[in-house]
Amino acid sequence: MHRQRIGNTALNKVLLFYLTVCFVPTFVWSITVNSPAELHASKGDTATLSCTFTSTSPPTSKMTVDWSYRPQTGGPPQTFFHFSSRAFPPSEGQFSGRVKWQGSPARGDASILLINATLNDNGTYTCSVRNPPDVHGSPTSHSVLTVTPRAARVRFSDVTLLLAFILLPSALLTFFLIGRILCPKKQRSQSKPTRSPIEVTEGEEYSTRPAAETVKSPTCCELCFMDPDEEEYYYNLKKTPSMEEEPYVESKC
Image 1 (tube, rainbow, N blue to C red):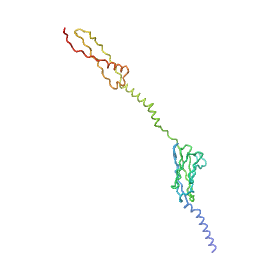
Image 2 (cartoon, rainbow, N blue to C red):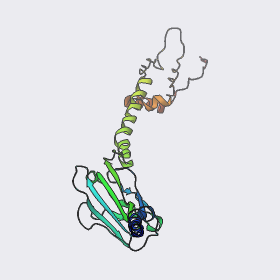
Image 3 (cartoon, helix red, strand yellow):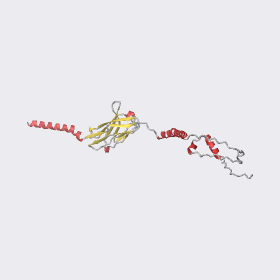
Image 4 (cartoon, rainbow, N blue to C red):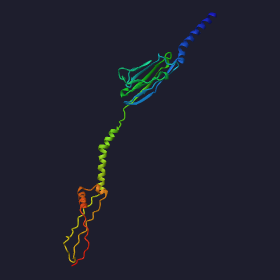
């Protein structure tokens, strides 16, 4: 009986050690990584690939961050960015010169920037964080990036040129035509024949000069839309000196 008790005690210790090694790190030394499930960007934009993590141990120099990319068309993921005390951006390949470290390990941030996004960047991005001894839990997270073509935009210079060379002349021509319609031409009045000063009709012992023709001043609208012939006639008529009617003088004969 004594030997059986010793055997049971030894077995219990082995089981306890096994449970401690297998399960305790899961609850004590664990790390959790989170990132948005979907990300959207327009072609040419700078897309922020967000990634945050929580760890039971403070970040140390042994902490590492890896970003991998799996194309939308499929295939194995490829690591293109690595961080360990400092950033190691890609020097070749699709993301060369377009990835910038934006994270802060002290704040639990492992984000990066993807500069000048293209349609070929569509796919799944995976963020992996290791912070020994926190190596268990959920050390990875996935985000699907969708890049769409940028909508066409009209620049201010294009609008200015359009107004200056097309719309403005069209507006002036339309205004001129409307003015010609609203201000019809006035028929040139025919001057009445006048008698000669030496002409004497029956019953008249003296002659008189005809009264000067009355010139009506045109309106602003008529001057604006007056034909060249009418305009010349108006100004010539205006310059002609008016003839005042001679006073009545009784004959002394």
